[in-house]
Length: 336
Image 1: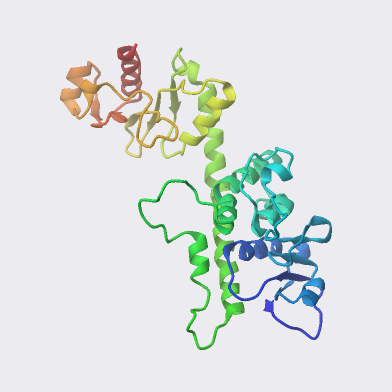
Image 2: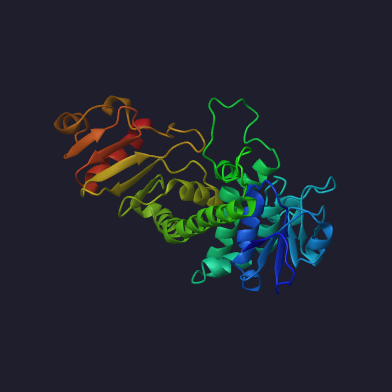
């Protein structure tokens, strides 16, 4: 419920500004309303200082950042808060916070208690940091006018979450501008994005992390060099987890290939990509194999049941696990 004025004060009030709304305060309000103490709160949209003073918590307006009194504005000249400097470096993100980032900083862990109650504390902490890096930081940056890159973009990006929230504002020439009604739609939109993002991390990303960790720890059983990792099944998103595990183990760049079964029961051998460099592989499959298929590839390699090697050398296939493994072994030997 959004209200501008009320003759009877509700039990709890969340204050934010009226008029044109943005992604950050819509998300801040949604996050707060997931917490027990704010679940039934009314949202008061106003810039009137007297009305804001009566609110239990105020976001994105008022010119004050003071957690002790639950005031979370970021527009004042004196505000320079980031995740890094407000956590004494425990969260190494240097983007200036918006009202959404401030609410996430102070209430985010409690928010995740509501959104992923069955997860263990380690997983909640991992999601807390990841959700900031891959969701919240973008919202903070956009609201504070910080570009993702110093280079001139090659094309227009118009479908961001912030852009979709902006488009929910009433048109300048609407005869009846219902800002409050549209703000409710905005909070629903950003809330669904947030919940879906957390749900994806809990149901897909975290289970993948456990699978990749187990395979990474067994890599020397697969090949003495530790340069080949085997997954029993395909479809698991492994790249980001592999890079992180290598970094933690102090062996960045070590793993050259992963092998895994595909949906047809065949096996793939895939070259690990260079982190941050798109389609560049650390060690592509041998050039002489690239673009060759089936029996011709088996004759060329001496490995039975070969299926293909991609023209770029980033991936190949074999009908059996043994065949895929032998392709990875030979590729390593040919490089050395």
